[in-house]
Amino acid sequence: MRAGGADPDGAPGVLRVAYVVRSWPRLSQTFVLNEILALERIGVRITLFAMSRAEETVVQPQVAEVRAPVHHLDTGSPRRAVAHLRVAAGSPWRYLRTLAFALTQRHLLGGYTQSGALRAFDRAVRVAVRLGVRRGRSLWHIHAHFAHDPALVALLAHRLTGSTFSFTAHARDLYQIPEGALRGRAHEATAVVTCCRTNADHIRGVIGEGDPPVELVYHGVDLGRFHPAMVRPVHEVPLLVSVGRLVEKKGFDDLLRACARLAARGRRFRCEIYGDGPCRGDLEALRDQLGLAGMVGFAGARTQAELLHVYQQADVFALTPRVTDDGDRDGIPNVLVEAMACGVPVVSTVVGGVAELVTDGRDGLLVRAGDSGAIAGRLEELLGDPVRRQRLGEAAAATARRFDGRAAAQTLAALFGHAAGTGA
Image (cartoon, helix red, strand yellow):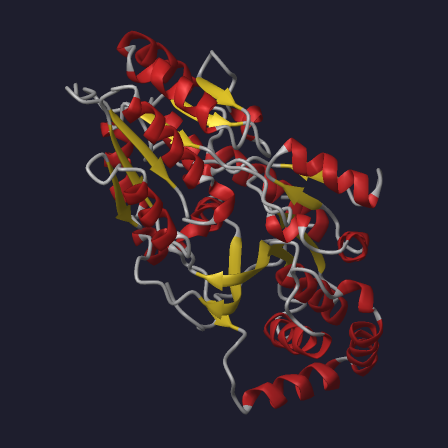
């Protein structure tokens, strides 16, 4: 990957997309990385604009496969003033009109959006200067991942350049911005993309039907990477696995309480939880308080390559998300799709779009969120029944084939191409 380098020239008509993201590369946002790789494989030229650096110790190896140049918008430099001068000189009216828009449209700010008007405008200028110098040589579309700060920057860059723009809304970024901010961003977008039907319904309820269209595009997974093991291991003590960022909405405390109920009933099992996050210390303390230190381990963050082996070794996969008091929630967690693609039966909760992926009793088991007793009951059903685990796991792998990352990329490329006028 070439950080901050120049894009290769593209022939007229080639679809070129500027991706605006909050930070890069984020381990918990591997779905963005996979989406970019899938788009590049079908010929889309991408330039990445990251509002900040992720600064994480664990990085997915496939980051190195990304061909897109990466520009970090948080870098302080004297060139910032030069960027403003170039954009203003190129189109004084657009520059002044967009600055006035940023300063006066206060409804676009607040909530989960952390940028102020001037900071968002400055970042948009730095996007625009990279795109504006190439206008006329190729067609650009701007796409933001997340409805909060990235979508605001993309909206302002759209106004500065005249390029079309769209954004994908996911979870907290969608439910924790003011409704006026969502309507304002959607009003000028060619499309609002989201990852589950529940989100799509919420967006339509806020912005109304019609333009822009709300497009449901499920995050796909790389089915060439995630697949069942040739021979699934037989464990004397069943292995329960969970993967996710250790944050409140993932409901790992509910999973731990369910494990305590299983242990109290004499059920033998091992549980390994993969991931890291701000709640790790509290969760480890709860594990010890519940007397689970010898049965439940926290294994830390892992790359997708490492998780493949984890999934293929698991007897059951559990993820028990919930809606937090401030409205944060999951859409369809990619780890559920990855586990199912590996033929693992899953136990999860009916939150966000989980029920759009898992059909209770057919390819997994579902319970209401926050009910540790119900979670324990469904886990016990599978831990004690290897035949049922195999049947549900085979059905889960079949379901996951509908979530192919290549198909999702084709859908997005068509949306971007139609907006930009390339006919892609």
